Amino acid sequence: MTAGLSRLFLDHFFSSSLIAEANDRLVGFLVGFLSPSQPTVAYIHYVAVDPDFRAKGLARELYTRFFDLARADARTVVQAITSPQNHRSIAFHTAMGFTVSDPYENHDGPGTTRVRFSRLL
Image 1: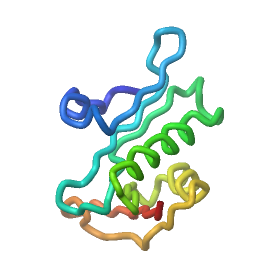
Image 2 (image 1 turned 120 degrees about the vertical axis):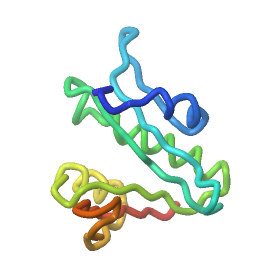
Image 3 (image 1 turned 120 degrees about the horizontal axis):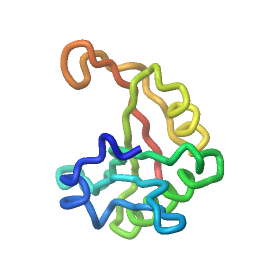
């Protein structure tokens, strides 16, 4: 679950990132930030939930708390991205009230197609 979680994220985005623990064990996290260049935007970069804790509302709770953080800083929109093949993420974000864009080709360079999520707060 933490394979892609760089310490960089926690060192620099700790005030807008969240963790979930159970029995002194990390079971989920959300790395997000409040955009310094777009004052109305909050961005969710990376989210993971331990497989044993999925489908129990943990991701929904992490997102809800992030929405509260964003609102407290006068942010009006939350954005995120994923690959078009990540059907589970697309379904989750849709259920959370995000709109899903058409695919953007070469979003992060050649051959990296992504869809963007956007949700008004």
